Image (cartoon, rainbow, N blue to C red; front, top):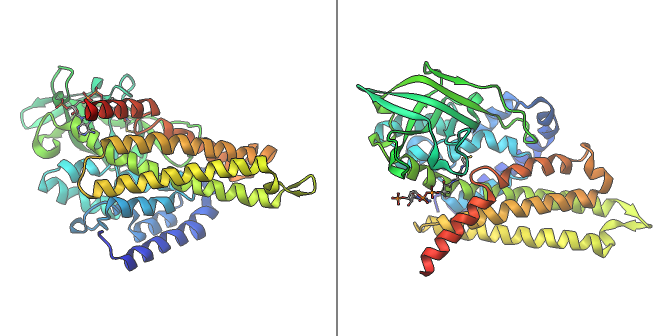
Length: 382
Ligand code: COS
């Protein structure tokens, strides 16, 4: 563990208090304005949330994966849009540099990402390259001691507020992993423009938009790790970690939804008694609680395995598949338990129902997780 038990308990308590006292009361306003108030962002920075997974050498907390998922279980107890702002710095927006950056790239970017001064964004997906990430078309052509980038990235989380983009681009034409490289591109670089913020089904306040590269020149030092051809494998390794993080978030949200559903079921009376006393309602509570416990156990197990230095490609995909589908079912039951009230926006379950739909899609759809699980399982037994 990176932290001793007492320090970890203090951190988890502080995050829990912050979520309960500051974030939950601000959820509804965030859903309407789509903007996280600056004082809340400042408190997130003070708590160290942006640097959870970045080494203390660069100003982060350097949490182990188990510690990180425990913090994320807490962060999940509120609108996921709050987590999303810090989430890319903890995960896909910083981990390429952590895993594969040069010393110069690490010392230049990681302290600013850890403090939250800089928001990092991960630019892999394109209009015609979603699940089939290797077919991406954004190109990077060497020109003296620069590269010239051309192409469009789509649905890029935090792009509207990002200061840094980890951009996967093609440096060779063949369809193979070694044709793809990763570039660290600063916002404001001439030739980099942003599309309009996307209008989404849920998660208002979690910002996404297109990122367009039009003859965008970056110095050769922007090539991650100083080496061409490592971008795809690095992206996959980044996603192995990201998928565990998202799974932990789903566990946290499911806990919140079960709590909200139980509260409603114990207060709401029909046929002269609280609906929580009806066995058909209890069945929904029981199924949600059992599935939530299973997902929590899976996430902790996979996180510990990762902390032991073992490969967790299979486990991360299992967690992502199970936890994201689980939270979808839990949200659906929470709405059902609320009855008509669950369909109107006065109750948080209506909003969470829409928010959680994204988890089965981003950082690899459920179908991609199935593909990875099957591939890894067949590899292991043949
Ligand atoms: N860790 C390290 N390396 C990995 C890896 C991992 N988890 N997964 C794949 N690789 C490597 C493979 O070992 C292979 O290396 P070699 O060329 O040396 O053999 C290379 O990467 C290509 O892998 P693969 O052959 O599996 O690529 P495919 O095109 O068949 O598909 C999937 C890979 C489908 C798993 C990948 O495209 C994927 O995850 N798609 C979903 C993308 C996604 O999650 N998008 C969300 C964007 S972020 S919101």
